[in-house]
Amino acid sequence: MEDLHLSFEFFPTKTESGAQKLLKTRETLSQFDPDLFSMTYGAGGSTRTNTHQLVSLLHKQNVPIAPHLSCIGHTKVEIQEIISDYQNQGISSLVVLRGDLPSGLGYAQGDFRYAKDLVEYIRAISGDHFEIYVAAYPEVHPQARNYDQDFDAFIEKVNAGSDFAITQFFFNPDSFFYFVDSLHKRNIDIPVLPGIMPIGNFSKLARFADACGAEIPRWIRRRLESYGDDSASIRQFGLDVVTQLCDDLLANDAPGLHFYTLNDATLTSEILKNLGW
Image (spheres, rainbow, N blue to C red):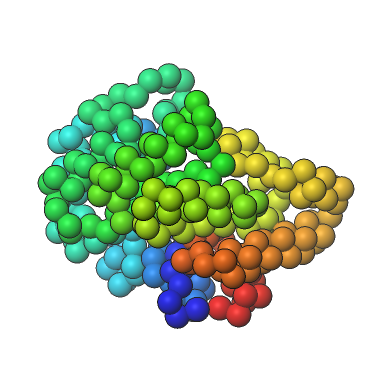
């Protein structure tokens, strides 16, 4: 496991108790010696302040932290201020995204339209200071017209100056392998980290999947539905399925794993222990 990348995603909390839980989760997951923790950024920058505060706190604790930065709703002046602040703190990794449109807003506000525009701007004002991660969608971005358009948009992000990619979560490994093979055919060798979503609650998982365009294979959906309110069976089945998914990915040369932890260490820790991490 020494040569594999491992990272965990958190979201900024709104309460003191939530923040304490997040810090405890970080402490638990640190036992796996991750390369990176990332911190999300709300639609239109809605959690901007919480993100910055938690990023600064974790960075001061010598945690390898990568704040998410989305461009929707931001001006170049605002982005420059944020980038300058992160540089001054010594933060050296960013997850750069277009971001979701704020609720009720059907168009993009601000000086940037796409993630590639933000990547280009960050490179223009900070050079190679930051290691930049961008999003990838093996099962196609939900707002893309088709696979080819989405794939070309990803390549534009790479060419703008990205170093790594993190995928949306998925449960069909073939979608990931096809995506990576397609990149290789275009002579693009950027490391693509598969995004992993532990399964602990079916209704929550279904809601996330519907929102981001991730497919829950029919056999998984039907098994989860059959358990009803039997949370123990859902949990065990989820651990088995996701552990096998990770095992298949790593056996076929995935460069590592990126876990969507939902600020909880329990399921992620068990999956990693199952893998012998």
